Image 1 (spheres, rainbow, N blue to C red):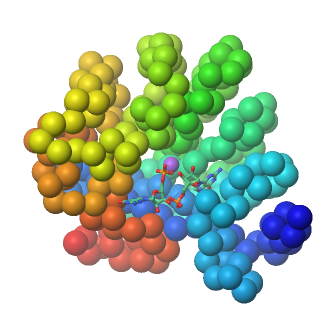
Image 2: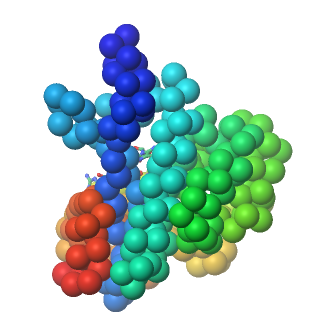
Length: 250
Ligand code: G
Ligand code: G
Ligand code: NA
């Protein structure tokens, strides 16, 4: 397949880049951390979003090399921001294939060591479905990652696995409430309220994804959601723009 061939070439030629989207405190509007999001600077199609190519990276196994590049670049960028006076945590998306790789922890530690980026500044975003398969394996992987200093958050929360046992069993720092629930916030939002209560009871940070309107933001603030991410504050942007945004917040 030609997409596959192009991605092999893209990996060799390092045609990928990262954009960053801020995660913001609902109460103070301060940036608390940033999420690294992969883009492909395609030679003739311009900058492509992950929806066009992440599945193929997974299927071909290229995600291992690209994932290592992401971790190296994130480490480097985290240090750049720290030198500029913003020692801010960065989150990285981890795909199912990467999560099942027993070398994941070692690879991440090695990639970050290149720039002396401390692991405790890095958060890994996984999805509920990754905790569904071999539970003992998942638990061992998460424990190892935590022992190395990484924190773990659950992405797209509410859309996958409905068994909540892992909230008690696994060391989870944040739940990111899926955009579909935030979109549906009206006067009431029972599912979002339930997740916010769960987070309060378990000392997990609640993060709303895809916040686009002032009404949604107001509701989240009133209902004591911790943080949000969304176009209303900022789209994903290049590192240089992020540095400016941190220096001169909107
Ligand atoms: O940037 P965008 O919102 O289009 O990203 C969509 C999805 O692509 C994310 O929710 C995430 O699942 C996936 N993604 C983004 N960046 C990365 C990355 O660096 N590695 C992996 N494995 N997936 C990513
Ligand atoms: O699931 P995850 O957090 O990895 O998703 C990140 C994706 O969500 C990115 O592709 C980003 O472009 C997209 N995104 C971020 N904020 C918003 C938003 O406010 N509205 C919409 N529609 N998409 C958003
Ligand atoms: Na994510």
